[in-house]
Each structure stands twice: as structure tokens, then as C-alpha cells.
Length: 260
Image 1: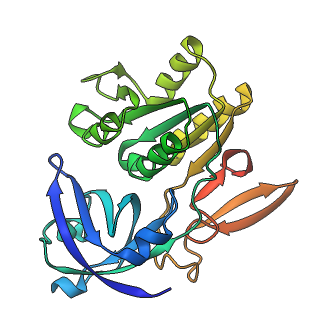
Image 2 (image 1 turned 180 degrees about the vertical axis):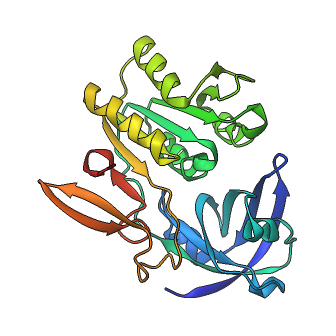
Image 3 (image 1 turned 45 degrees about the vertical axis):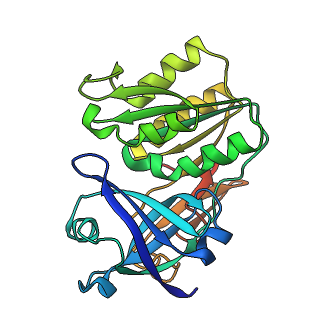
């Protein structure tokens, strides 16, 4: 996998600590599938940092967009990069969602997990799926900046916040329970977010018999499947094995994920 030098087109804040960055890379934009990711290094910007993984939120023409939250030194340094600077980018990496022609798809996001679902939502709509909706969970209304991207493409978005500042006061898993009681059961669930959230969604989906695909979040030291730092236990046909989130994932069928 080649490391590409990519010029930043735009890097702007969406809220206090959530950013949108777009850079040029025809090679990635032409090969990308929803659910895949890139690793980004900013040593070329004059700051030496380890490369970090970011979900690809959108590819358009020759440009790639990532959406990220500032949570440490690397993402803070990334937020300080400006248009015209050069990034070291590797990708697209991993295996993405298996996009079906379902008439009723439900997307579920926890926080910045929404970044991996935006391109998926666009592809589902482009394939003529008549019903695509999003359940969006966040800590507070201040963390809902990514919701607007989904609203702009025509999705119905239902919100839950931990502090009750907007939408349902509670977790997105509670919102899912309420949604399933009041609405037509979806044909498929696509989700991304923290593992406790995904584990609960998996339980609800299995009870209802709903097929589900999850994009897992994991710490990745290399992003290329070499270091084995992101191994996840998977059960298939009764046999357990460890697969790499960065290589065989990050998307897995929920029924195959071993949560314990």
C-alpha cells in the first residue's frame, strides 16, 4: 500500500472540537468503499506524529473528506493544519460495508462514529433504497455537529443525548428500543460507535432477527495488519478466531462478533 502525499483543500471546525478535513487524492477516491479508512500522518506539515486511522466520510471527484474529533496531541496537531499543507496518507484500508438493496435500512451512530456512516448513507440512497434513517447518539447537543451532514442528504435523523440537552434523554440504545416499538422493523442495521453501544445493539438485533453490520473502533498502531494490536475475537460456524480490525475489518457482521 503506497503512502501518498495529499494536499489539504480545507480543514475547518464544525463545533468546539469536531473538524472536517478535505484533501486531494484521486487514487483513494477512485477505490474507496463505505466503511473503509485511511491512516494520516502530518510529518510533512512540519510536525512529527505517528499516523492515525480516520474513517473516510465522503469521496467526491478527486477529494476525500474525513471527520474527526480532537481528543489528543495527534488530532490537535491535525486541527492546526491549513489548506495547502501536505499530509502523508495511506489508504483506502480495510473492508467496508456489504451494501444490499434493502428497502428499509437503519443506521446507528455513537458520537463521531457517524463519520463512517455518511458515505454508506449516500450509497444506500443512490441505490434506490426507499427508507434510510439514522439514530444519532451523543453526549450533548454540542456534539451533534455531524448530524447536519445526514440531514442535508435527506435522511430522517432521530437524536438521543446523554444529558438530555436535545432529543431523547438517554443512550442511543434506548432510542433504538423506542424506535423498534413505534416503527416498521428495518431489514438491516448498520452501526458504528463504542463497543458497549454495539454490544447492546447486537443483543436487540438478534432478538428481533435483524441482520446487522458493525464498523468497529479499535486502537491501531500500524493500520496494515502487521502489529496485531487490533485483534478481535470472531465466531464463525462455531469456531473462534482472532481477526484484525484494520485488515479483515473494520466491518463485521454483528452475529459473528464475540463481545466477551
